[in-house]
Image (tube, rainbow, N blue to C red; front, side):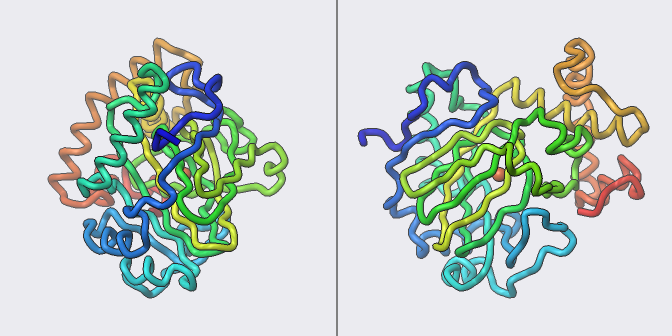
Length: 302
Ligand SMILES: [Fe+2]
């Protein structure tokens, strides 16, 4: 394979923000940046806030009851075979070697799609390291994403972003401090798209498409390369604004139903977000800023 990352289902790329998952192939399965030794070093090098890990969880995990595994980040990677754990290394482009690989992958995608996908806006990469049989609970992600399976296998159950029987409009909305886990109902599994991933496989995960992941019987390592487009940023901004308005007792129509009103809300977000960020910086703590701006009693537990 001449390329690091290659789109298999070429007809699936119609616009900058496809709403359906499609498949790719990659040539990264034996890349040295994904050896457990190198990943343990990365886990130790990254700032504390960029590494998250926990013990065994379920698809419908209550975030308040997420178990710790009692190990350091580095130790978790080294002992991942028996750790019964899930770990994510966030924004790994902080390390120049991973940044170079992220850019190489997305530059190739941009080349294959005539610049339609993989754009240069807010590129970021994540690495998931998980024990055999572990689960990533139901959630959505606020970015466009290629999930690249490096080691082990997994199955992702994916639903349409617009399917309100799977995730309610309220649960699709986002606000600072909201935990990403979403309620999961087993009965919806029958209409999920099941993407099976083995080393060499990759899939596109559409913006904010609800999904959960079940790992196979081996250690799994996945590389997630993400980016944004202006359309994607507007969509995510609307989910923030709609959450705030709902908390003020003004539940809103779905993004796209009232385009003019949507654009007013996005403009308001652009004005207000820097003010919120300034307050956060001033008080030095996200939870305190959330309490100050939104009122503590209105905020779900983090
Ligand atoms: Fe995800």
